[in-house]
Amino acid sequence: MMERILIEKIGVSTFLLICFSLLPLISGCALPRIIVLDDPLTPEEHLNLGVIYEEKGEFENAINEYRLAAKKLPIGYLYLGNVHFQKNELNAAERYYRKAIKREPDNADAYNNLAWLYYTKNENLDEAEALARKAMELNPLKIQIYRDTLEKIRERKKAMR
Image (cartoon, helix red, strand yellow):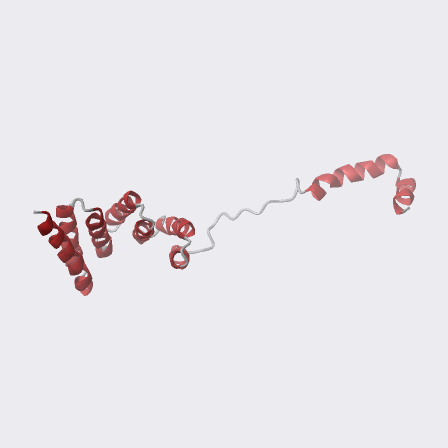
């Protein structure tokens, strides 16, 4: 009943013009889109979020966060290597460990983790030994961890002779 009164007062053509003018707004076609140009999170926050995802076993979400962090923080590549290692994607893990070493040559953990990866794959054991020694040289505070890697590599090499 209300539509009839409105149509009679303003006329059919005006009513249709109003309806067709409002149609894009009602259907959502003309609504403005919100685009975030700046990432609201810092690289450190992406790393922290990635760690949370990784701890929950949400590896793909962790990978996405680590990639965002790695754009500005080279340590993000180490984290990417670690999560791919957990997923048993060893070639990807190796690639990211190498990137971590290239971007941050004093990161002892990257050397040690690449050495451990080679130990796990049972390949490049001479290089793995050199990597573990380099990790020990770079960070004496973690020498026990790196020495453990080195000893396991040496034991494997000895067993293969």
